[in-house]
Image (cartoon, rainbow, N blue to C red; front, side, top):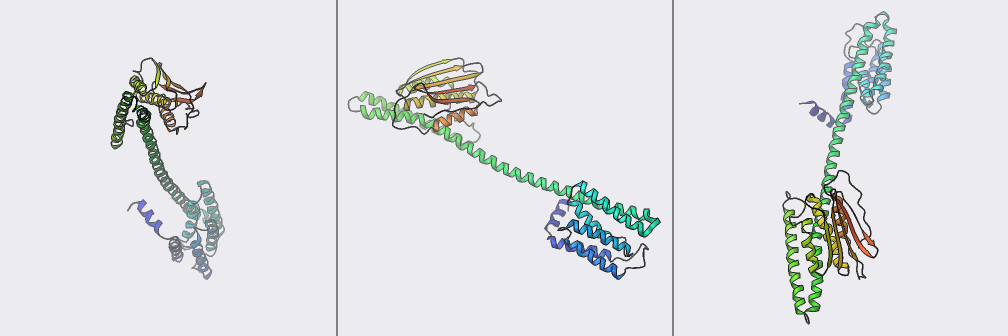
Length: 393
């Protein structure tokens, strides 16, 4: 059985039982026969003092300093009545150990010095010339009790620290798990919005065109229905890709259908087929851009053009400038009166995506136009610039 197991078993014993056992053991030690030749035997007063001494030990954990003071006084009285035995100091050492185990080492050492000095002084009065012979064992015994008490205190503090670390580690793991769940929920919400919002907007607008033109402009209605069919196919494919990623934890967080700046031309053509006239200009080479930044840039453009198609008069300007260190994106469209406002979830998700690659984004009304402006690093830097947001469209 190792020390940890022994300590665990001892800790399961109720405190009153432990104190009673200690007191009884100390009391039996006091009744041991005299073997050192000091005095002529135990007097009735000595038995009374031993009984009081044993009773004090029952409350040593509640009142350690009071018990220590009483133990020193009773030990001195036992010496004065010549009723000590080789083990009669056991009760005093137990009291010294208890105080030492509950206080820092400076206090424990000071207490040990005072106790040893008091006992040596009494021995000097009683024994006289033999003080050195008897004071050295007493001092060593007190010092040993102090050392054992400090050892027990340090070990208890160490165990408490380990326990506290384990509890904090468990709490940290739970907090980390909750954080990851929250991040996964946000990521799923962003991916779902990216996969559905644009295509549903296109479907809604073309459904309106088809319903109004089916009677007198069947060709326009047929073209709108074809666009609805293509958009439905695309949204189903993107949702399927996203679900496949969710079922496969080893996959990357982005859906397999996620695209980058090289696909912006196709994206612009989709919006133009849906009725949005886009003035598009891109400068620079998108090749050096990291994959994460490339996907975020594509999503920013998609969100900006979707808002322009949904809320604008049918026109939008898109400027993409790729520099050696950053990518600048600006999407703007004139404002028109509308009967309802969007939820803003897309803009919030866009800002979160930009922040995830250490970029900055601004959106709001500027000179009669709603402008989405984002600056993304070509590669993710170490420092994180502050992401700012304006009024939602």
